[in-house]
Image 1 (cartoon, chains in turn red, green):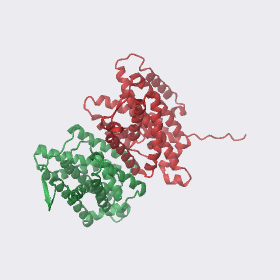
Image 2: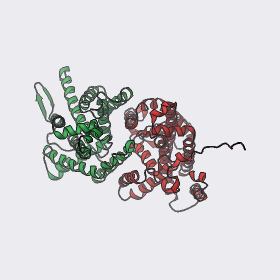
Image 3: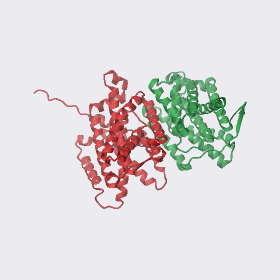
Image 4: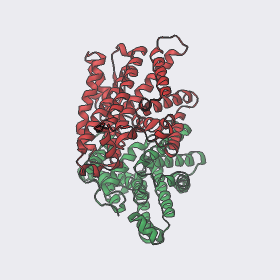
Length: 327
Length: 288
């Protein structure tokens, strides 16, 4: 999208082709089609999760290690709604909004801490949720929860749903990053105290961003539930999802709208190629890649796709409108 | 069971838990004090120590308590390697170092998962369920010995830090790196030593835990959070704070084990963390 600002026709064309290809995938009869759709669906779900983390971590440098909390809550909220007979799409929406509202008191708890302490407190919350859900049978216990089938339990249905949601998340991120809120977030990431000194409503901005972030992660969790039709607290609240969110965004492009997508595609690629050979090996490679990225390409893989004068990314894209001087 | 026996049981269990928590947090808080780094991979070093001990006992037939010595030596080597080839480069990164250390956590956990698989293992101690008798009270011998070893190590480290030249240098760098350097202390060397001590003590704690509880490559998360609780409650960087906080959290958890099923007991530590971070983020005793 930065490319559009710059009028780089080539990138726009490539993006357009890729989008059309993605839309057409379920319709053409290529070999391994179902497999590709499954892999891409998971990639899109991870992208949503990563994008939600990116809002806080990429823009405002609030590194959360507990996004699995919102992912898991969204999954269970959606599951609970659809078990009551609510249609899948509405369950998803209700889940997203419910978790977003729930994030407000959570934000109150988490944002009282800064820097690494924020990270620790978010981790603690995710772990508490995991243990509590595992413990209480009303909340699912160790047996987990099943979801009733819906249009979205078909491969095609969930594929298109996640594709559309991913596109929506990219637009949402870009819109937010370019808005005054986004600018404030970047400023908060740089120096929070200075921000409150000059009158930026730090608490409000952090909370509202968390609201959107939690909602997005919850929708990702809901899609996961609709797709796999079975949820277990040890799975959806596990630290793995929190870590995935971080890796995806950091490797792909922290603070960039397309970053999580690039990262998720890479992670899925690694997982599908390496897992059959040596289970778990992809995580190892991921760790190594992450370290390499942190030292060599700190802004993530998207920097490779940018023109050399644009390595900074979103921060430089905010255009200042000039009034025409009176003749 | 009458109340006095129960009380003694709870007390001894509290000491046992506290000793392990203090041991693992010691390294974490030292590393933070001297290097300003929150080592998210700390618990994976502990688990690594557990597996090292397992290997020593099962493949080399060593007695588990004798094996602790080579395990610590091995962990010191690991500490040196990870410092030279990794930690050293993360010192100037600032807040973003959290991501570096998550990556390290990932790498260590998954190397262990690849080598040992995901099922839970534990280190056989040869002591079974034998009990030690203290006056009229009985307590599992194994836990007793583990607690003694942990407390002795903590005491030894504290003494070392207080009295030895290097210990004083470590405390100096922890207070102010710049001032220490002006006084001629090689801060890189001190950081290396601190890191190695931190990693080794984590590994020792892991080996000791392995004797008592089954563990798996990813089991570190719970201990990581408990270590953070203790470190934050006591004040990151303060060793005395760690000791006090370790006892508080260990005793509280032991007490609550009466009312809560065992899977829930980590929640006690988590609630502590949240409470402390909301009310007094610097902890009880701020930076030594």
